[in-house]
Image (cartoon, rainbow, N blue to C red):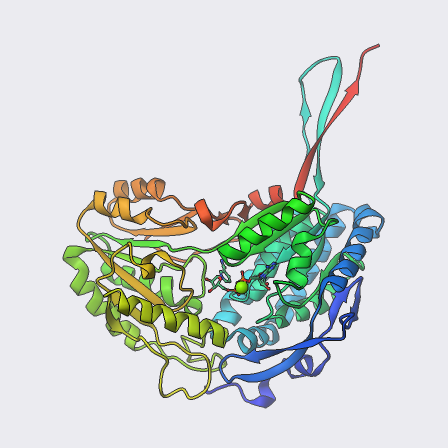
Length: 497
Ligand code: NAI
Ligand code: MG
């Protein structure tokens, strides 16, 4: 089937409605009255304009979130009711799956098959998983001293600010809202300025589900000198969760010193994807493709450094380039598209500039290396592979965040063990081998929050995800992210007569 026809655009109504801020249960314009454009990266056409929230809007949203946290019905609600609201939201997202997938593809550019069969269902499952946690949070009693009855309470942190990126707009929302809501916090979310739309649609669904006013607030807008910065500096926000660039992460940490708010960070990566000669080569070729080209390479855990054992290098490259040549690139709304555009002109230019850097460093271009000439519009970059890369080159050390793979040959286990960890990042890594001992050795050796063995980019809401080193701190997903959104209080009761 070709590109979705206009009559099949389920999100037409949504696109034509005004895009306002969600504050205190109501849709409102920005105080400044300002709006900004959001663009379809496949066509470069403006999809619609969106309210541009700033500091005053964040202040209003925080006031509403504070009130909802301290005195609203949310606080008094049973955890079972909280869970039911979350399950209802999950059901509504599922009911509107096709519409939400189209919104995500139009705003971000990703292939519709990915929006529809990865982003939307994972979003639904994340809400369902965390709805389960709402009723399972517990404190403990501690037998420390018989003169005292001592117990702990697990309490929500309070008002949480959440700043999310554009690569998985609705999924990042779910990763952040799920544990925050399960634990009873209230939220001020700032979606990325490139992709504000799916959050706004999910905001509508959250109101429909019946979340009390002020529990969920959405302030669309920019980062620096704008809504994002206002969140990170705010004196009445108790915690900030951020996903994005490492440089921004550092600014968020610096800003947190205003009131020493808690911070969790999920930053970039430069994952080693290691293929040993004893691996199932065809499976590893497919894994290398998923590793770097999924979501146009705009993935923090992308397998951007492919380490190939020397004796399989040429065979592997032949199979890899043959498959990559068949990847169909185009408008994400076409269900045959496997690779869409980069999210923005800025990102396209950034990726193309890294391609030039790699050429300048002496890496050899095996395929791609430019914008596809046949696509006249849109921020496309051809799937690109460089061979003969040295791990010290910038193309092997800096996050490109695009469909650009750096292939690094290695001679033995010691060699690759050393190079794999020679990076400032530590988000993920992968090993391909049929040798169980080697697999486990590398799983423990790689300094990263996730290691995949004979697979890549596998996720489940129950399995924690996060970084070592400059990939950030804190773990999202699984039970560990509950820690990010709760405080432990110890209570001592004097039992002495
Ligand atoms: P970014 O880190 O600037 O943006 C992410 C979010 O942070 C957005 O919502 C943005 O508005 C907000 N933000 C930006 N500056 C801020 C500030 N000073 N205070 C508070 N909030 C702020 O990332 P950007 O510029 O969109 O992309 C640049 C690079 O960052 C990418 O090429 C990629 O390498 C990396 N990145 C990594 C992501 C990840 O998943 N780890 C996601 C997005 C980008
Ligand atoms: Mg930025």
